[in-house]
Image (cartoon, rainbow, N blue to C red; front, side):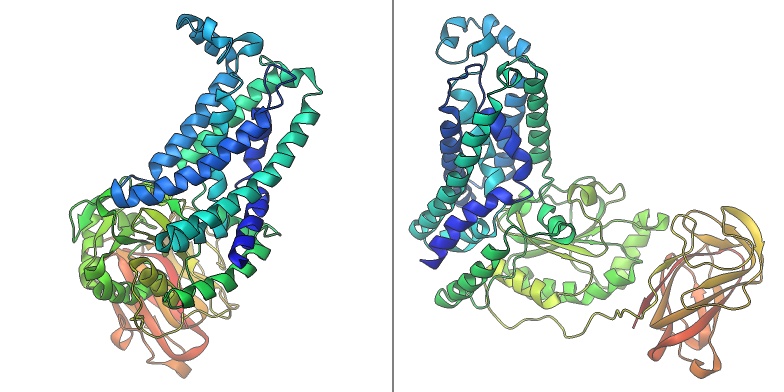
Length: 565
């Protein structure tokens, strides 16, 4: 009974969701026709919307079992209807010519019409409601819970809760549409099908349709959670959490759901090249498997620290239908080189498929903005869990198990994320993103001789010698150059390359108090820079502040310092 009430309430609250608010003008506009007395349109729209939500939800569940229909088909269908309706409203003259050319003028008296009858009194509102069903149903955590947990175990119970959710949505939506239509029909320009208002409304239809096809809703809720001062589903989530715990106990599902995003179709992999450990793969090929799309780049220390967890999960669950796709999206120019990536994959013992995303095509398709970033996709092709940055390893493995339908002790190794608030942030040296530099002259593109600063404050760095400064790297020109950095960290890493293609020594100097506490790539305080990669240069016994000084020969390029505690 509690979930029944929550379902109805969720339908009411969905009207306030940020992914719904932009389409309300579309729905109010859909209630308008060329006739002021056409009062049935709001009721036709909400009835069609209700049918659309129930029908497409059941179709989605049945299709994933019987015909393996991609969820993208529903998004494209919905967006296509909105675009078609938008074109008819934005350019009514074309619609009228089409009616005439197809000899439909007689039929238009009952169906399509033209001029004041240019929009069919039945077809247009029906199509509007059907097209917007998937939009509304993707904006509620309760709907997602019904779809993912109730329907698979009980079709009858799931249908009851789904109908309750739909009734709540229809009730509040009908109030809005009837009230909105009553107000806006007072204005003649709102009724005139050739007015600028009606044409503009058609453009809104088209834009929303294109956005829905493009899948821009994939991370909308995460953005909202981080940027808006309100959460329209707070009450719903509190009640639903209790219900999920009860459902998990009574249905032997273990812990309550850790899935943290609404089920939305994953975008297709795009522009990937140079596959490693596998022939080229597509998400449709992997339907029926649980897929973890991991955005990483091989010189990113945050990404490298996640590798033991990824490799552990792949080893534990690969034979149970789990796949990891490592999408190497480069941060620096040298990471575009397939040979460099292949060498890094071999060096770290990565066994799962890895591909290069050199043009950021797949990165942009997922609207990603972080290294590392993990998107967990269920067997039906929907994104169900997102983790940005390091951490949450236990939750990620729980999500993997939940989507695989297994319940067993976690394989995730112990360990906290080695980052603290006192730690120096990752620091880039090139002019694209430089920060905290001090010294003479100022840091600008080109070659110059530098005089190091007399003293360094916390997190500041300075140069000595002759350097060529570029957008990404800074490169030594003379044979005697220094870089000093006052850091607060336990472990210090640098991303470096050698322009000479050789193996040249870089000396690491530390204060006497921490002398000898070098990283794994700097035995005895000497780093042999022989390839484009991340180098571990300092490893202190405990977190603290110290000044790290590099002495560099000519031809060595530095990109960034990054840190761990």
